Structures are given as C-alpha cells and as structure tokens.
Length: 346
Image 1 (tube, rainbow, N blue to C red):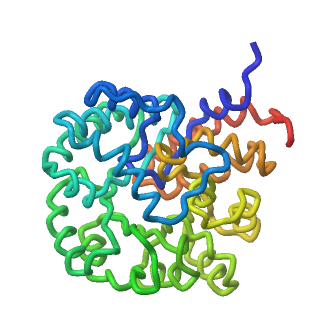
Image 2 (cartoon, rainbow, N blue to C red):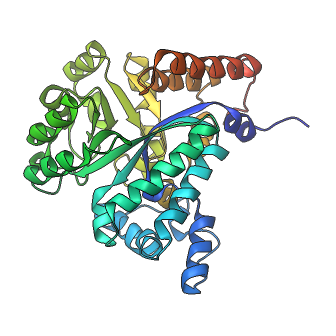
C-alpha cells in the first residue's frame, strides 16, 4: 500500500528545537489523565483545535495550561505521567533530536519538587537515549520576573548535569527584552550551557537584536518580526543565527494574521537559517509531523525544504561530531528514499 504524506513525514528523522514539555502530550493523553484522576470526561477533540479558533491574547493562552495541564501536574503521579506521554509522542514521530524546554515557573505553580521533576526527566531521557533518541533538557526562565531571580535560578540549576541549556520565555515587551538578563545568561554560558531566547514573536525586531547582540545567543525562538528589519537580517546571516519557527503557534496566538503570511519561506529565501517546530502542541493541536504536513499542503513546501531545515537543526544540536554525523546519515537515507515524492499541491 502506498504511503500518504503524513506517514512519510512521520518516518522522517526529525529535530525539534522549540518545544515546551508541559504542552507536548497528545490531547488523548490529557483526556485519559482527567478521566483517571478526576472522573471528568473532556471533549474528544479540544475546543482549542477548531480551525478558526484563535487565542484573544497571551493570558488566554496561559489559561489553557491552567485548565488542562496544571490539574494533571498537581496529581501525585502527574509529572511522571506527563513526562512519559511527552517522550512517547516524540518517539512515535521519530524526532531524533529534541531541545525540550521545561518551565521552572510551572513547577512552582503546582507546588512540585524541582529535584523530583529533574529525576523523572533524567530517567525518561535515558529511556529515549537507549532507543536512539537524543533529548537535551533546556530550563525555561521567565522574562516576567526580575533579572535577579533569573540569576538565582541559573546558579541553582548549574549543579544539575541533566540541564543542557537555558531559554528566556514569557510575555514579550520592550521592557522585558533579553539583554536585561545578561548576568543570568553569562553565568550559564560560562558553565558551558547553551543559551537561547524567545524574541521577535510579540515584540519587534529590536527584541531579536537585543538577544543576539546583548546576550550572544545563536538560536532565537520564533523571530517572526525579523523580516521588518533588513539590517537585522544581515546580522542573522553573518552570525549564523538559527530561527526556531513555529507557524501554527504564531497563527493561533494572532502573531501572524494568516498561515499564508508566516515569514518562514521569506526568511529561508534570503538566507536565514530556519527550522520547523511545534512549540505547544497540546494547546495548538499541531505536533511537528502535522506542522510539516501543513507546510507542504498549505504553503507548497517541498521535501527538499524540510530536509534543509532539519539539517539546520541538526547542525546546531548539542552533540559530538559522531552523533551529529549519525543524525545526518539517517536524514540522508530517508531523503534518498523519498527524493522523487511529489505531494499533491493545494
């Protein structure tokens, strides 16, 4: 039987640089958790997944965590169950390399123990590693807390070898730009950790510039506003900055008006290194395989484009030369098998 596009892309050895642990599991796992712990039957399909649904603002998006994720995490085995469901989803999609962002703020909000969560994550990541999947844990720091709190968190977490890097996220404004958190990220970088920052998603190109020149990051989460500034584009190219693009996320949150407006193709065309990511699939209803299928069917993206963007992600992976070579080898093998595949255009 001939494989369809989704089956083919699901087999693709993929990479995801921008993914939040707490919103990684499939909706079916959330439904099962609510039924198991609360005796509550959630809709078979999340109301957030309707094609026309858009979050009115960032707070409404955060309310999705309050409604569907935090109740699960507050149960005795909630974190263990969610982590296992998240890792299973990554394995099922053949996402061979992942930078998995976990929220310090979420752990605090559900009154869970940080050391216990890190222990669970380490066990789950080791399980994935044994199956040939590389998962690197990235600690998420909120830009909506004072910079001194960020520095305190980094100092605390540097003692845990399981943490491979730090990311700055939260509600983005001119008052919360990345360069305000220089001390925290210098501490992380001095300890050999990867540093990243969400920028240019809700704020303008100046936010991206602040992260690149103020912190020295080489990976930007989102970066959708970059096309508004030609000089910034040149800076991104000169410094080999990788943009972790999340088209469906940007559409659902209203940061772009239409999926057709997403700048991933324009940025790629001018030479910026872009990658494809799902961000918060539990709330958006689009996992990485779905996102890639959507790009092919709705934006006319070719298999060769997906391969090139995945190479961009593999190239900046936290990996030794042999591991990186193996990731590329797996991708080459898949690409050779489907190089002549022609998906039906829209």
